Image (cartoon, rainbow, N blue to C red; front, side):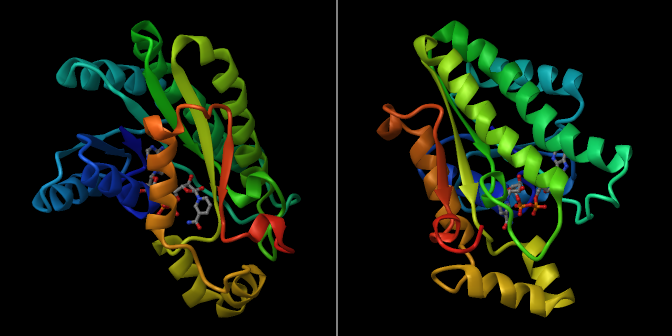
Amino acid sequence: MVTGAARGIGETVARFLGRQGATVVLTDLNPQVEETARGLAADGIAAEAKILDVTDNAAVMRAAQEIGNKHGHVDALVANAGISLELTAIEHDVESWRRVMALNLDAVFFTAQAFARPMLARGSGSIVMISSISGVGISRPERHVSYDVSKAGVAHMARSLGVEWAKQGVRVNAVGPGYTDTQMLAEVGRAKPEVLQAWLSDIPTGRLLRREEIASAVAFLLSDAASGMTGHLMMVDHGYSVGKGV
Ligand SMILES: NC(=O)c1ccc[n+]([C@@H]2O[C@H](COP(=O)([O-])OP(=O)(O)OC[C@H]3O[C@@H](n4cnc5c(N)ncnc54)[C@H](O)[C@@H]3O)[C@@H](O)[C@H]2O)c1
């Protein structure tokens, strides 16, 4: 089950997991997720879509039950949906701050809670949350304190839940992507080419990450190949966070 899977990293994660043989449920607030799932199915992937606003906790709890009933159980959850509002600290108001936290932090926690409940009862499951380079440092030149705080919170949430659920067979890890080749970044590149250039010059490889490079890390952490790992934040950023980028 992947949240925010209509496009971007979520879509690619779902496709990657599907190619490994998983049955994938793509969820998103945007009804476009249905077309995305049809695209995966056309490529031979066992994919289905569910329209789901992850900030609506009652809907998330219903979805966990419905998906579990339909498929027997859910092996893995990828809490991917997230937003970033480019605002300076002074420009933030309560509404913009709450909007970012409601999706990037609260919804990640309550989605993990809803899907972990049956995993804990069964004694098996794996969860990956999507953090960011902004969760370990402050990237430039953009300004988004709410995003930075929320993504640091996601990394620490994975640590806390990873430890809390370790004896019950549920692993929780986070992936911290660097700047990734997505629609969101393409829009920035078109609107502000100088910002894209600044990012590229700070990335040790000099190029954006491919979405598949994030997806393969997520797949690894979800899989039994990572059975020794829980509570871990895996940076997938071409060395950005250990270079001068953050
Ligand atoms: N693109 C990057 O360079 C980058 C870098 C680091 C981290 N990330 C993180 O990766 C994740 C995916 O990023 P992306 O670039 O693919 O973003 P994106 O904007 O392309 O996709 C996000 C998806 O989440 C969906 N969504 C938004 N609000 C939702 C809600 N309330 N309920 C359900 N779905 C909702 C959107 O409809 C969209 O399909 C985010 O958490 C983001 O912070 C992205």
